[in-house]
Image 1 (cartoon, rainbow, N blue to C red):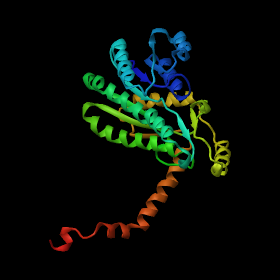
Image 2: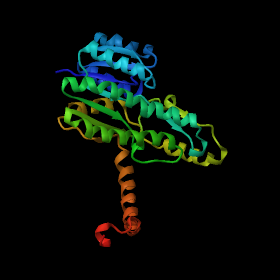
Image 3: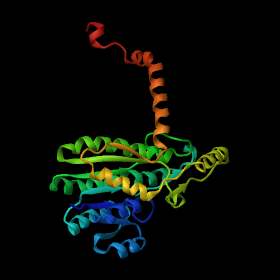
Image 4: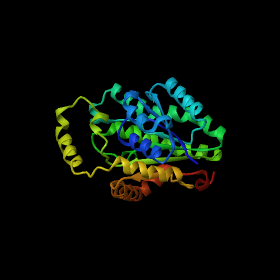
Length: 278
């Protein structure tokens, strides 16, 4: 049976890849974008299988109205994909309050509004699948990405709790953690006002980014179909080739550091009532 998808940020990049993959096999998609003109070609090819919705995910009322309209239009919602987002690029010292609040409004509160709007529909129909597009940067961090990492780490924690809360309703949650993809990333990046003190870091990061083998959004779209169709989907999954190598080292370092300082951890606990004779 075909599925009905609700995909935020469908105008380009990974969101477009997800929408096209679902449509190509006969599924239906409520595709959102801040400007629906960017979805005209999708509608032209797939016709009534696409519901194009103008949506800024930071507008809570609009999110609830959009999810409701999609559910009424197609009669159900099977897969919710929170893809809309952008990257804030800048050293922590460079970030303004507005920079960070805007980042969190889109990358954290946007998915929160979509989830809260969709959950009553999913419960009523007896199940569904929420797919949160996180990042390798949701489980590790690099210089100049503090604001972005803060938003994605928060999304990871929110979603891990969510998965446990809704499992009893037959609703599954998956965090997809992509590496570098050819998504026209410059259009989805906001840069803080630069301080010359961090110019060396910026140059190093640009050199590193230039060495990355960017993945194909169409391949990510096909992979997402497998996640959506799985009877036992993962809570977390990397998309692309970079995640495993990066995170294996990060987690090995964390475990080693925690072990090295374990005696201090125990000391910091103090004496429990069981050991003090109280």
